[in-house]
Image (cartoon, rainbow, N blue to C red; front, side, top):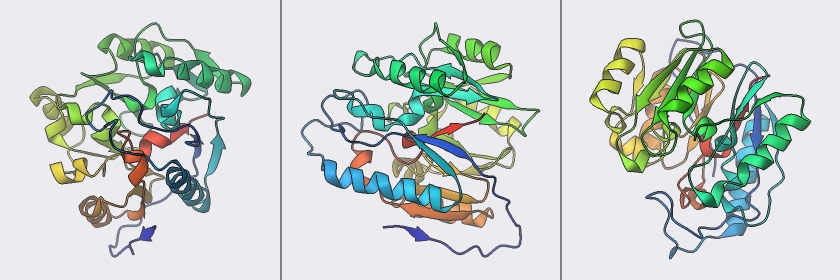
Length: 282
């Protein structure tokens, strides 16, 4: 079910057309457990997952954005989480190198997509999981990468991404295993504004975020637990999980328009809206 909240504030947020990459969950299942949300004893309704995924794709397209589709491959049930395959800035794609063997082959599928599309592909030497642990704010400090570590991506990958993408990277330490990727604890609301859950980060990283983003929208544990931070925003419309009612109210109060989509089946694998959507920045 999709719900759109009306905007009741005077500040007008301006959307920007985006280009996204998604991968349908045709082979999706919870066949192993590599994050705290995955439970192999909980059944997954693949047909419902496909319907929910298609609703998300239609929502993004309906907002005026371009959505490319990556062909799913057998035996790679987590390919639906397309955000993890690479991180792109200005036509350069920094490829993923997954921590767990179950997802390793996904990197090749993403590399083939980018190379076929004429991107400047940069193969990683360090473990990283793409936009799962990288966020880009083009209008913040001249163009800033926020980079997470602690559970999946190695800190050395931050320096590698910085060199390959030619943008400064700020390392942020994740300390709560429930929020194993940066995109479960922090999101860009527009080109310079973020929202985040402080409790997912070390004390030092919380101080860094407070200093860099004093006007950030702060989420609480309930918001994060509902995957409310695993969102996609075009600068005005914020697409987020339908369970995240509190988060929807917070972004609306900040001048954005929440658009809620139900992704209950995909949450069983530890992901929601953002996990399913990679932003392509040509």
